[in-house]
Image 1 (tube, helix red, strand yellow):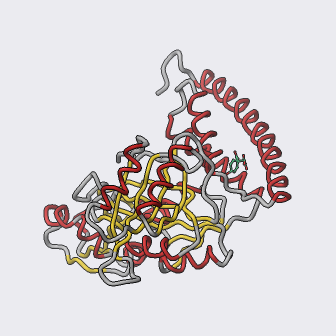
Image 2: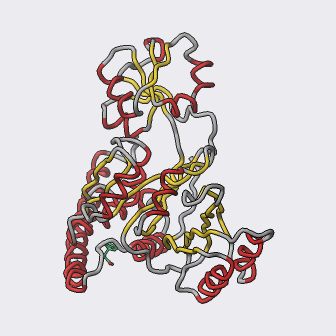
Length: 366
Ligand SMILES: O=C(O)C(=O)C[C@]1(C(=O)O)C=C[C@@H](O)C=C1
Protein backbone atom coordinates (compact mmCIF):
# COMPACT_ATOMS: atom_id res chain seq x y z
CA UNK A 1 0.00 0.00 0.00
CA UNK A 2 1.36 3.43 -0.90
CA UNK A 3 1.19 6.05 1.88
CA UNK A 4 2.78 9.43 2.21
CA UNK A 5 5.94 8.00 3.81
CA UNK A 6 5.87 5.22 1.33
CA UNK A 7 5.89 7.10 -1.96
CA UNK A 8 7.03 5.57 -5.27
CA UNK A 9 10.41 7.26 -4.69
CA UNK A 10 10.76 5.51 -1.40
CA UNK A 11 9.88 2.19 -3.06
CA UNK A 12 12.45 2.83 -5.78
CA UNK A 13 15.04 3.50 -3.13
CA UNK A 14 14.20 0.28 -1.30
CA UNK A 15 14.29 -1.64 -4.58
CA UNK A 16 17.79 -0.35 -5.24
CA UNK A 17 18.71 -1.72 -1.82
CA UNK A 18 17.29 -5.11 -2.85
CA UNK A 19 19.26 -4.97 -6.12
CA UNK A 20 22.47 -4.48 -4.17
CA UNK A 21 21.66 -7.36 -1.84
CA UNK A 22 20.83 -9.61 -4.81
CA UNK A 23 24.15 -8.80 -6.46
CA UNK A 24 25.91 -9.73 -3.23
CA UNK A 25 23.91 -12.95 -2.90
CA UNK A 26 24.86 -14.00 -6.44
CA UNK A 27 28.52 -13.16 -5.84
CA UNK A 28 28.47 -15.28 -2.69
CA UNK A 29 26.63 -18.12 -4.42
CA UNK A 30 29.36 -18.22 -7.07
CA UNK A 31 31.98 -18.32 -4.35
CA UNK A 32 30.13 -21.13 -2.55
CA UNK A 33 29.81 -23.05 -5.84
CA UNK A 34 33.59 -22.87 -6.41
CA UNK A 35 34.21 -24.30 -2.92
CA UNK A 36 31.67 -27.11 -3.48
CA UNK A 37 33.25 -27.93 -6.85
CA UNK A 38 36.65 -28.33 -5.14
CA UNK A 39 35.12 -30.59 -2.48
CA UNK A 40 33.63 -32.59 -5.36
CA UNK A 41 37.06 -33.06 -6.95
CA UNK A 42 38.56 -34.28 -3.68
CA UNK A 43 35.63 -36.65 -3.12
CA UNK A 44 36.11 -38.09 -6.60
CA UNK A 45 39.84 -38.63 -6.01
CA UNK A 46 39.08 -40.39 -2.73
CA UNK A 47 36.15 -42.39 -4.08
CA UNK A 48 33.71 -40.70 -1.69
CA UNK A 49 30.02 -40.13 -2.38
CA UNK A 50 28.85 -36.64 -3.37
CA UNK A 51 25.76 -36.80 -1.13
CA UNK A 52 26.73 -36.20 2.52
CA UNK A 53 23.49 -36.12 4.56
CA UNK A 54 25.26 -35.56 7.89
CA UNK A 55 27.02 -32.48 6.54
CA UNK A 56 23.75 -31.24 5.05
CA UNK A 57 22.11 -31.52 8.45
CA UNK A 58 24.98 -29.50 9.97
CA UNK A 59 24.60 -26.82 7.27
CA UNK A 60 20.82 -26.57 7.79
CA UNK A 61 21.18 -26.37 11.59
CA UNK A 62 23.99 -23.82 11.42
CA UNK A 63 22.18 -21.58 8.95
CA UNK A 64 18.97 -21.66 11.01
CA UNK A 65 21.00 -20.60 14.05
CA UNK A 66 22.68 -17.74 12.19
CA UNK A 67 19.41 -16.19 11.05
CA UNK A 68 18.12 -13.19 12.96
CA UNK A 69 14.61 -14.40 12.15
CA UNK A 70 13.59 -11.75 9.59
CA UNK A 71 13.64 -14.24 6.75
CA UNK A 72 11.06 -17.00 7.41
CA UNK A 73 12.53 -20.30 8.65
CA UNK A 74 10.74 -22.39 6.01
CA UNK A 75 12.00 -20.10 3.28
CA UNK A 76 15.56 -20.35 4.57
CA UNK A 77 15.36 -24.13 4.53
CA UNK A 78 13.93 -24.15 1.01
CA UNK A 79 16.60 -21.75 -0.27
CA UNK A 80 19.42 -23.82 1.24
CA UNK A 81 17.82 -27.03 0.00
CA UNK A 82 18.18 -25.68 -3.53
CA UNK A 83 21.67 -24.21 -2.96
CA UNK A 84 22.94 -27.58 -1.75
CA UNK A 85 21.10 -29.37 -4.57
CA UNK A 86 22.85 -27.14 -7.12
CA UNK A 87 26.19 -27.78 -5.37
CA UNK A 88 25.69 -31.54 -5.63
CA UNK A 89 25.02 -31.15 -9.34
CA UNK A 90 28.44 -29.45 -9.65
CA UNK A 91 30.10 -32.31 -7.83
CA UNK A 92 28.55 -35.28 -9.63
CA UNK A 93 25.72 -36.22 -11.93
CA UNK A 94 23.45 -37.75 -9.33
CA UNK A 95 20.57 -39.92 -10.40
CA UNK A 96 17.89 -40.55 -7.79
CA UNK A 97 15.39 -43.34 -8.42
CA UNK A 98 12.05 -43.08 -6.64
CA UNK A 99 8.75 -44.92 -6.51
CA UNK A 100 6.72 -43.12 -9.17
CA UNK A 101 4.81 -41.96 -11.01
CA UNK A 102 5.70 -38.28 -11.03
CA UNK A 103 3.86 -35.84 -8.71
CA UNK A 104 3.10 -38.49 -6.08
CA UNK A 105 4.13 -38.07 -2.45
CA UNK A 106 7.32 -40.07 -3.02
CA UNK A 107 8.26 -37.57 -5.73
CA UNK A 108 7.69 -34.78 -3.22
CA UNK A 109 9.81 -36.63 -0.64
CA UNK A 110 12.64 -37.04 -3.19
CA UNK A 111 12.51 -33.30 -3.93
CA UNK A 112 12.65 -32.57 -0.19
CA UNK A 113 15.72 -34.77 0.20
CA UNK A 114 17.65 -33.77 -2.91
CA UNK A 115 16.16 -30.54 -4.29
CA UNK A 116 15.46 -29.94 -7.94
CA UNK A 117 18.98 -29.87 -9.47
CA UNK A 118 19.49 -33.64 -9.44
CA UNK A 119 18.16 -36.10 -11.98
CA UNK A 120 15.03 -37.75 -10.51
CA UNK A 121 13.75 -40.93 -12.15
CA UNK A 122 10.32 -42.39 -11.33
CA UNK A 123 10.10 -46.21 -11.38
CA UNK A 124 6.97 -48.36 -11.21
CA UNK A 125 7.82 -50.47 -8.14
CA UNK A 126 9.81 -50.50 -4.90
CA UNK A 127 11.71 -53.52 -6.20
CA UNK A 128 12.82 -51.60 -9.31
CA UNK A 129 14.07 -48.70 -7.20
CA UNK A 130 16.23 -51.11 -5.18
CA UNK A 131 17.51 -52.85 -8.34
CA UNK A 132 18.42 -49.57 -10.03
CA UNK A 133 20.55 -48.48 -7.07
CA UNK A 134 22.03 -51.96 -6.57
CA UNK A 135 23.17 -51.98 -10.21
CA UNK A 136 24.77 -48.54 -9.79
CA UNK A 137 22.42 -47.03 -12.41
CA UNK A 138 21.24 -44.61 -9.72
CA UNK A 139 23.26 -43.45 -6.71
CA UNK A 140 20.29 -43.24 -4.36
CA UNK A 141 16.67 -44.31 -4.11
CA UNK A 142 13.63 -42.92 -2.28
CA UNK A 143 10.77 -45.21 -1.17
CA UNK A 144 7.97 -45.02 1.42
CA UNK A 145 8.51 -47.17 4.52
CA UNK A 146 5.55 -46.46 6.80
CA UNK A 147 2.38 -44.42 7.08
CA UNK A 148 0.98 -43.16 10.37
CA UNK A 149 -2.50 -44.49 9.53
CA UNK A 150 -1.81 -47.59 7.43
CA UNK A 151 1.39 -48.90 9.07
CA UNK A 152 4.37 -50.45 7.35
CA UNK A 153 4.98 -50.53 3.61
CA UNK A 154 5.73 -54.23 3.58
CA UNK A 155 7.33 -54.30 0.09
CA UNK A 156 9.98 -51.91 1.33
CA UNK A 157 10.71 -53.94 4.49
CA UNK A 158 11.02 -57.15 2.45
CA UNK A 159 13.39 -55.50 -0.04
CA UNK A 160 15.48 -54.01 2.76
CA UNK A 161 15.95 -57.46 4.23
CA UNK A 162 17.05 -58.95 0.92
CA UNK A 163 19.30 -56.10 -0.21
CA UNK A 164 22.80 -54.93 0.68
CA UNK A 165 21.74 -51.29 0.24
CA UNK A 166 21.76 -49.10 3.33
CA UNK A 167 19.37 -46.44 4.62
CA UNK A 168 21.16 -43.07 4.66
CA UNK A 169 18.24 -40.67 5.18
CA UNK A 170 14.62 -40.32 6.26
CA UNK A 171 11.91 -37.83 5.31
CA UNK A 172 8.55 -37.32 6.98
CA UNK A 173 5.88 -35.86 4.74
CA UNK A 174 2.40 -34.89 5.93
CA UNK A 175 -0.05 -36.39 3.49
CA UNK A 176 -2.34 -33.63 2.41
CA UNK A 177 -4.96 -34.35 -0.23
CA UNK A 178 -6.50 -31.64 -2.37
CA UNK A 179 -9.32 -31.43 -4.87
CA UNK A 180 -7.66 -30.21 -8.06
CA UNK A 181 -9.19 -29.39 -11.41
CA UNK A 182 -9.04 -27.08 -14.38
CA UNK A 183 -12.53 -25.91 -13.39
CA UNK A 184 -12.72 -22.86 -11.14
CA UNK A 185 -15.76 -23.78 -9.08
CA UNK A 186 -17.10 -26.85 -7.28
CA UNK A 187 -20.51 -26.57 -9.03
CA UNK A 188 -18.95 -27.56 -12.34
CA UNK A 189 -17.49 -30.85 -11.02
CA UNK A 190 -19.48 -33.95 -12.06
CA UNK A 191 -16.69 -36.56 -11.64
CA UNK A 192 -13.93 -37.02 -9.07
CA UNK A 193 -11.15 -39.48 -9.79
CA UNK A 194 -8.02 -40.69 -8.01
CA UNK A 195 -6.09 -43.67 -6.73
CA UNK A 196 -8.39 -45.76 -4.45
CA UNK A 197 -6.23 -44.98 -1.38
CA UNK A 198 -6.53 -41.21 -1.93
CA UNK A 199 -10.30 -41.55 -2.54
CA UNK A 200 -10.66 -43.47 0.72
CA UNK A 201 -8.85 -40.70 2.60
CA UNK A 202 -11.30 -38.04 1.36
CA UNK A 203 -14.54 -40.06 1.26
CA UNK A 204 -16.14 -38.03 4.08
CA UNK A 205 -15.35 -34.68 2.46
CA UNK A 206 -16.71 -35.86 -0.90
CA UNK A 207 -19.96 -37.05 0.73
CA UNK A 208 -20.41 -33.67 2.39
CA UNK A 209 -19.37 -31.36 -0.46
CA UNK A 210 -19.92 -33.26 -3.71
CA UNK A 211 -22.65 -35.81 -2.88
CA UNK A 212 -23.78 -36.08 -6.51
CA UNK A 213 -20.41 -36.40 -8.21
CA UNK A 214 -19.40 -39.71 -9.76
CA UNK A 215 -16.33 -41.20 -8.06
CA UNK A 216 -13.96 -43.07 -10.37
CA UNK A 217 -10.76 -44.95 -9.58
CA UNK A 218 -7.51 -44.21 -11.41
CA UNK A 219 -4.18 -46.08 -11.57
CA UNK A 220 -2.44 -43.28 -9.68
CA UNK A 221 -3.04 -39.75 -8.45
CA UNK A 222 -0.86 -38.59 -11.36
CA UNK A 223 -3.10 -40.35 -13.90
CA UNK A 224 -6.14 -38.76 -12.21
CA UNK A 225 -4.54 -35.30 -12.44
CA UNK A 226 -3.79 -35.88 -16.12
CA UNK A 227 -7.47 -36.76 -16.68
CA UNK A 228 -8.60 -33.68 -14.79
CA UNK A 229 -6.40 -31.53 -17.02
CA UNK A 230 -7.90 -33.04 -20.17
CA UNK A 231 -11.61 -33.42 -19.34
CA UNK A 232 -14.05 -30.64 -18.42
CA UNK A 233 -16.02 -31.19 -15.20
CA UNK A 234 -13.48 -33.66 -13.83
CA UNK A 235 -11.52 -33.11 -10.61
CA UNK A 236 -8.72 -35.24 -9.21
CA UNK A 237 -7.69 -35.88 -5.62
CA UNK A 238 -3.95 -35.33 -5.35
CA UNK A 239 -1.00 -33.30 -4.19
CA UNK A 240 -0.20 -29.65 -4.79
CA UNK A 241 2.74 -30.86 -6.87
CA UNK A 242 0.28 -32.66 -9.16
CA UNK A 243 -1.80 -29.47 -9.46
CA UNK A 244 1.30 -27.45 -10.36
CA UNK A 245 2.58 -30.01 -12.84
CA UNK A 246 -0.72 -30.41 -14.69
CA UNK A 247 -1.68 -26.72 -14.57
CA UNK A 248 -4.68 -27.29 -12.27
CA UNK A 249 -6.16 -25.13 -9.53
CA UNK A 250 -6.77 -26.28 -5.97
CA UNK A 251 -10.54 -26.09 -5.44
CA UNK A 252 -10.24 -27.32 -1.85
CA UNK A 253 -7.10 -28.06 0.19
CA UNK A 254 -6.36 -30.49 3.07
CA UNK A 255 -9.55 -32.48 2.49
CA UNK A 256 -8.26 -35.77 3.88
CA UNK A 257 -10.04 -37.30 6.86
CA UNK A 258 -7.17 -37.15 9.31
CA UNK A 259 -4.66 -34.40 9.85
CA UNK A 260 -2.38 -36.91 11.54
CA UNK A 261 -1.65 -38.65 8.25
CA UNK A 262 2.09 -38.67 7.68
CA UNK A 263 4.25 -40.92 5.56
CA UNK A 264 7.86 -41.68 6.35
CA UNK A 265 10.21 -42.23 3.42
CA UNK A 266 13.79 -43.52 3.39
CA UNK A 267 16.77 -42.63 1.23
CA UNK A 268 18.75 -45.66 0.05
CA UNK A 269 22.42 -45.70 -0.80
CA UNK A 270 25.52 -47.89 -0.63
CA UNK A 271 26.64 -46.51 2.74
CA UNK A 272 24.93 -45.26 5.82
CA UNK A 273 25.40 -41.69 6.95
CA UNK A 274 28.10 -40.30 9.24
CA UNK A 275 26.97 -39.43 12.80
CA UNK A 276 25.47 -36.01 13.51
CA UNK A 277 24.70 -36.37 17.23
CA UNK A 278 20.98 -36.73 16.46
CA UNK A 279 20.68 -39.95 14.47
CA UNK A 280 18.58 -43.04 14.00
CA UNK A 281 19.78 -46.55 13.31
CA UNK A 282 17.58 -49.20 11.68
CA UNK A 283 18.19 -52.87 12.43
CA UNK A 284 16.53 -56.15 11.50
CA UNK A 285 16.89 -59.25 13.67
CA UNK A 286 15.38 -62.68 14.21
CA UNK A 287 15.03 -64.28 17.65
CA UNK A 288 15.47 -67.85 18.83
CA UNK A 289 12.27 -69.73 19.49
CA UNK A 290 11.89 -69.65 23.29
CA UNK A 291 9.60 -67.83 25.73
CA UNK A 292 10.62 -64.31 26.71
CA UNK A 293 13.36 -64.05 24.10
CA UNK A 294 12.02 -60.86 22.50
CA UNK A 295 11.90 -59.18 25.90
CA UNK A 296 15.49 -60.28 26.62
CA UNK A 297 16.66 -59.08 23.21
CA UNK A 298 15.07 -55.67 23.67
CA UNK A 299 16.43 -55.31 27.19
CA UNK A 300 19.82 -54.75 25.51
CA UNK A 301 18.54 -51.35 24.37
CA UNK A 302 16.85 -50.49 27.66
CA UNK A 303 20.06 -51.21 29.60
CA UNK A 304 21.99 -48.76 27.46
CA UNK A 305 19.22 -46.14 27.73
CA UNK A 306 18.56 -46.33 23.99
CA UNK A 307 15.10 -45.30 22.85
CA UNK A 308 13.37 -47.45 20.22
CA UNK A 309 11.14 -45.33 17.99
CA UNK A 310 9.61 -48.30 16.19
CA UNK A 311 9.42 -52.07 16.22
CA UNK A 312 7.68 -54.05 13.53
CA UNK A 313 7.46 -57.80 12.89
CA UNK A 314 7.36 -59.49 9.47
CA UNK A 315 7.29 -63.13 8.41
CA UNK A 316 10.91 -64.21 7.84
CA UNK A 317 9.96 -65.72 4.44
CA UNK A 318 12.63 -68.37 5.09
CA UNK A 319 10.64 -70.78 7.31
CA UNK A 320 6.88 -70.75 7.89
CA UNK A 321 5.77 -69.08 11.14
CA UNK A 322 9.15 -67.58 11.90
CA UNK A 323 9.50 -63.83 12.19
CA UNK A 324 12.01 -61.05 11.90
CA UNK A 325 11.80 -57.74 13.73
CA UNK A 326 12.58 -54.33 12.28
CA UNK A 327 13.57 -51.76 14.87
CA UNK A 328 14.58 -48.10 14.68
CA UNK A 329 16.61 -46.73 17.55
CA UNK A 330 17.87 -43.29 18.44
CA UNK A 331 21.66 -43.32 18.14
CA UNK A 332 24.42 -44.15 15.68
CA UNK A 333 26.51 -47.35 15.38
CA UNK A 334 29.65 -45.25 15.93
CA UNK A 335 28.50 -44.66 19.55
CA UNK A 336 29.83 -47.14 22.07
CA UNK A 337 26.48 -47.62 23.84
CA UNK A 338 24.89 -48.55 20.47
CA UNK A 339 27.74 -50.95 19.73
CA UNK A 340 27.31 -52.59 23.14
CA UNK A 341 23.54 -52.91 22.66
CA UNK A 342 24.01 -54.47 19.21
CA UNK A 343 26.58 -56.91 20.59
CA UNK A 344 24.25 -58.07 23.34
CA UNK A 345 21.40 -58.28 20.81
CA UNK A 346 23.56 -60.74 18.90
CA UNK A 347 23.61 -63.02 21.96
CA UNK A 348 19.86 -63.56 21.70
CA UNK A 349 19.48 -63.36 17.95
CA UNK A 350 20.78 -65.73 15.31
CA UNK A 351 20.55 -62.93 12.79
CA UNK A 352 21.19 -59.18 13.29
CA UNK A 353 21.82 -56.72 10.45
CA UNK A 354 22.18 -52.95 10.60
CA UNK A 355 20.07 -51.60 7.74
CA UNK A 356 21.41 -48.08 8.01
CA UNK A 357 22.05 -44.98 10.08
CA UNK A 358 20.98 -41.44 9.24
CA UNK A 359 20.19 -37.99 10.65
CA UNK A 360 16.91 -38.13 12.56
CA UNK A 361 14.11 -35.99 11.10
CA UNK A 362 11.15 -34.65 12.99
CA UNK A 363 7.64 -35.44 11.72
CA UNK A 364 6.20 -32.07 10.74
CA UNK A 365 2.64 -30.89 11.13
CA UNK A 366 0.50 -29.79 8.17
O1 LIG B 1 30.38 -30.63 2.36
C1 LIG B 1 30.28 -31.41 1.40
O2 LIG B 1 30.60 -32.62 1.49
C2 LIG B 1 29.76 -30.93 0.12
O3 LIG B 1 29.81 -31.67 -0.83
C3 LIG B 1 29.10 -29.59 0.05
C4 LIG B 1 27.58 -29.69 0.22
C5 LIG B 1 27.05 -28.23 0.33
O4 LIG B 1 26.70 -27.68 -0.69
O5 LIG B 1 27.08 -27.68 1.45
C6 LIG B 1 27.00 -30.37 -0.96
C7 LIG B 1 26.56 -31.68 -0.93
C8 LIG B 1 26.61 -32.53 0.26
O6 LIG B 1 25.52 -33.39 0.35
C9 LIG B 1 26.81 -31.74 1.48
C10 LIG B 1 27.24 -30.43 1.45
